[in-house]
Image: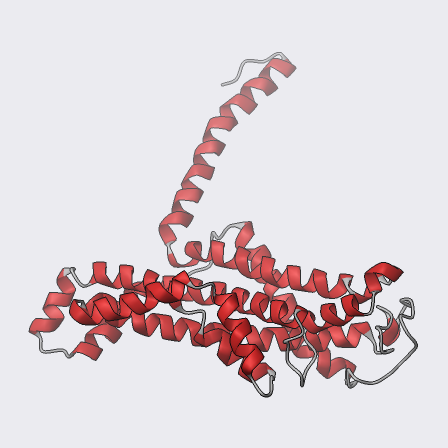
Amino acid sequence: MSLRGLSPRFWVAAGIVAFVVLVGVLGPLILRTDPDTTVGGLYDKPQCCGKLLLGTDNEGQSVLINLVYGTRTSLIVGLIAGLIATAIGLFVGLVSGYRGGWIDDVLSAITNVGLAIPAIVVIILVSVSLPKRNIYTLAVVIGLTAWFWVARSVRAQSSSVREREHIDVAKLSGAGFWSILARDVLPYLLSYVVMAAVLQISSAILFESTLSLLGLGPGDATSLGTMLYWAIAWGSVRTGAWWAFVPPTLMLTLIVFGLLLLQSSLNEVFNPRLRRGRAARRRMVTQVTEPETVGAAGLLTGTEPR
């Protein structure tokens, strides 16, 4: 799989995602400071350098340090929840679409019921009932309640793949049910599964931020959502302490925008025809514009184009 000829959109998305990951992974290693450490007063203004580059929050803690650790927490929750939701949806969709019959009817009914109920409502109800909320329990809750649309999409794809000739060849060769799913059906869905996983990670990060804004976020770690919750609760918007809510808002927007842009451009990675088509259009435009450019140059210089 070559990455040559990819559009600038893909490289912009990859750069944004790489930057966010570096902030979440390397940031805590570089700063080496507990985010709960008090370094100043209530809403101290940003300073030119150091750990007070983004000022302090309502508890006198560094907004910069909390932003770095909050980014890491949001990425962890999004990654775990996204992978769980994708794995469950992939399994249910593969079995339902390939098997058919009453199994398909039962799994499709469960999927349709799950799609009829807003996922955020279920997540909120389950989160309220949890005796203790941490980043891992929240990630599992989000993952277990957000897989339904992946299952429906994978079912549609796998049901079309099962009618192809290579499936009949695999059956005649004596391959079992799970072997056919893994070797003959899943490879045809790999590109879609990767794009679905990226979208699930983005959705999980937004779910966690929504829970945190409602006061249902992780109690053992700082996330971008909890930063916004405390900034709003302590009136940073009203008092003009923009440094308490603007950085986490921008970081959250950057994460989601980068992931959505990456998901929309991943089709070029798995489909070389799109790259070849764009390159052919570019060459066609170049061939059309070159004679016009030469002719215009000839008029300016008073010579005829050859």
